[in-house]
Image 1 (tube, rainbow, N blue to C red):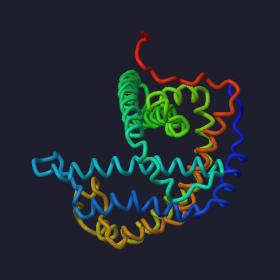
Image 2: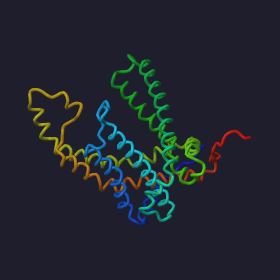
Image 3: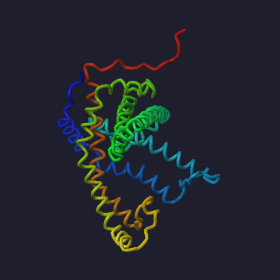
Image 4: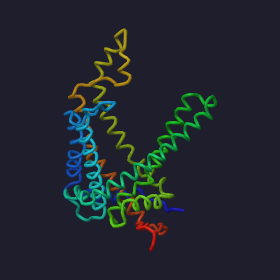
Length: 300
């Protein structure tokens, strides 16, 4: 049986490591968000990476740019996780750590592709299982209860899948010579019996996520209120509003995004460093599984 994770101590250590970080954790996170979310948002707003549905013959360049941005942000995300791990280990990580992932970009992308394909296969299996369950429970449960069971099962299933592979980046950081596929396999082995502990750790951050959501919702409600009042007073309602939502002016969207920045600059590194601490706790397990070695083909 796995030992109980001391979440309070782990989070205390994460906060202490963050405060000791140089450059400051909030500044590095801001730079990371500008280099990832900022770049992808600018490409979308400018239309350079906009893809029509279904894609047409003229979408070759936007498709190329969208894929390029996806690969770029994936490798930078790996660099951010590397910063979090070095920060927890007090190794003096800095801005340069964000681009360290580019020195092993091929392995990072192969790891992420492996995780994506495994997640896709598991996701299809879960959807098929839930569809069968829905057929069995049809007429037994009320429609609302059945919908809650299906959507709740989907959410928990995808969360379970993501937790299987969550240690893969850290294992690749520590042992790049073993390859990306070994990192994925070892993550699955090490996370057996520990998914519930990680879920409780993530659940302890729920208050911060809720605060960010409420800040965004409050600003959105202020700018959407006039439109909502017009809708309530009108005789007919455009059905597209139920699909696309109430349109907001650009400055309303900008303010709704910016108001979340202060909490995000604290929450994102906090959770990232705590996850790195969780990985460090996995390394200290006495019942840790054997390390997977890379497969070099049959012996000759």
